[in-house]
Image (cartoon, rainbow over all chains, first blue to last red; front, side):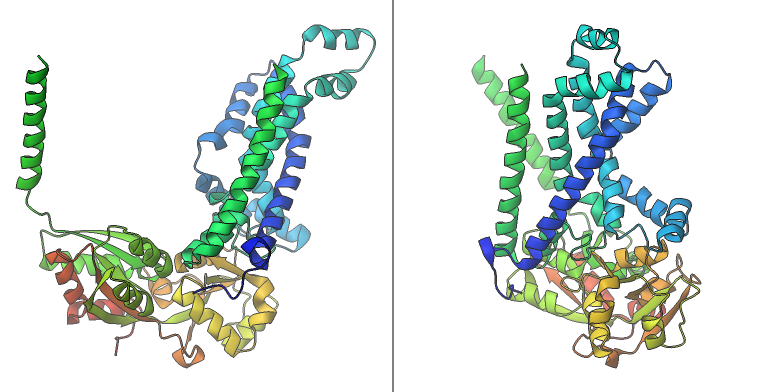
Length: 231
Length: 260
């Protein structure tokens, strides 16, 4: 079952579409990870709440859980027969499963520890007295956090964002469970590659896998360089 | 000292080899079956084991195309049960299956299934053009014959392009059914065997799609002994059993028609 004809770099337009979709998914996920993850990391670092240990564990769960576990629970939660899915359907008229929004929500859950853990480490490494100086000069805690703390920790934060981005690129199990392989909407690169292999279209699979490998290498190289310079 | 160590190691090695050789060939049959057979295979295996008490059967389910690709690359299955006859035939042609054992053992039946009470199931066209149908699940047409049949039905009705934005594609027929069962898809093209299964019987409603609605896709289910199972006597018996009247009766009860 060979492909009709390959195009640019040996990849069919459908594969380029899936790659573009994946990059969009990763970019939006990374944005959300920054907005949600930074305050979360800061709160986890500074709180004395007894809940913190439990919450920190919840954040770390995707590191050890099979992605299919997350995918399964999300498939159930997204169903119009249950609370969150029904609410979403009532508000937007659309289903969360098989939608790009659904994938973003899943990816944020799934990639959260890969961003939050580097965030925490980076924020913790900023010398306390610099922050205290800011506070003494009259800046509000919020201002100290965004104008002093975050800029001082930017390398580690950038590394966390890049890891979150890279990790979202590699997502497979979660999308397999809740995606439904809709071209241009939920058929991400990993699923597209899987389908090529299933259909025994090896030349396409090879070209696509190599493209993803190069991309992943480049991203991880950025993370490594960011972290090496810090010390 | 070193010589003694080597001798001890040799003795251990030899013992291991003897132990392995002495073990009687256990009657284990490893079956790779198309996902639509999920429920039928349990009943078939029980019946087979009733006649062959020593036999142990392990089953792996997946899209026919996936299983084909796995076997082609040396996956250790003895028997391959596909949702079409093309994959087993290709396996034989590639030398990864024993051509002489190639056979058709059942014919699948396609249904449109829904758990959404608002979907009009009076006839196929009404259901497929209803505004209540927001998501329609099918199996991946490239690797699952039921998906191919579903695509052909939609093409024959001239609905393929209009429905394309509403399609969600399961990796195999079981995943398509799971999309419908969880209510995430409003309807889906699945195997009759699924909606008749003990687990799903009575859930929602279904319409059987007559075979002329998907010309070119027979859903004739082919079986073949793989190269790996060549020496496995029990695996050969399993293939013969599939054509027996007992097995055929089970398959009929589970939503399949006879192969002829």
